[in-house]
Length: 145
Image 1 (cartoon, helix red, strand yellow):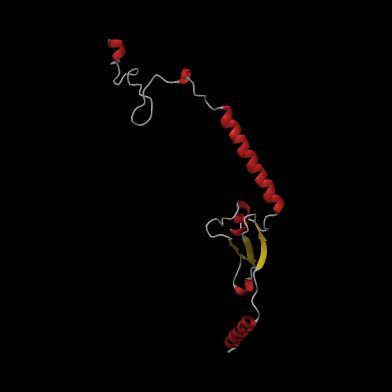
Image 2 (cartoon, helix red, strand yellow):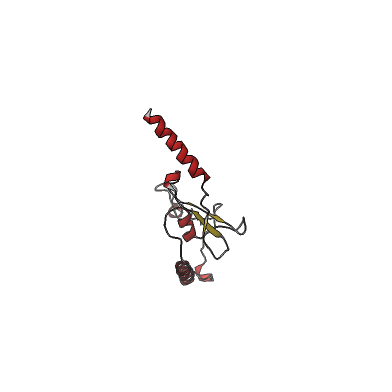
């Protein structure tokens, strides 16, 4: 008989919890694109171990979260990103783009008549060097002529 009383107590407590107002989502922030981010806190007694996080894009087609916000949405970080952190990461990204352009410019080969190859291209776009290399060992055409 005591186990039945315990069961009814649990049912009654759950009924009272269901009458309490639900937790509302908490707006956490927004990004430069205008996407808004929300969080619903974890409620272990209610069966939710982890917080629920989502975002509402301004435009469905271009509403992609930044990497920092994406990490927060997936639960890889506890705190949402700060504007200073996003600006710092953006500056690093721009610096890497500029460095990549400088390296590409440094090693770019100029188009001149001296650098042209004397070989024709084959059907796959590679130089055709069949005249200079032997196809079978010992049968080089240029040596035989």
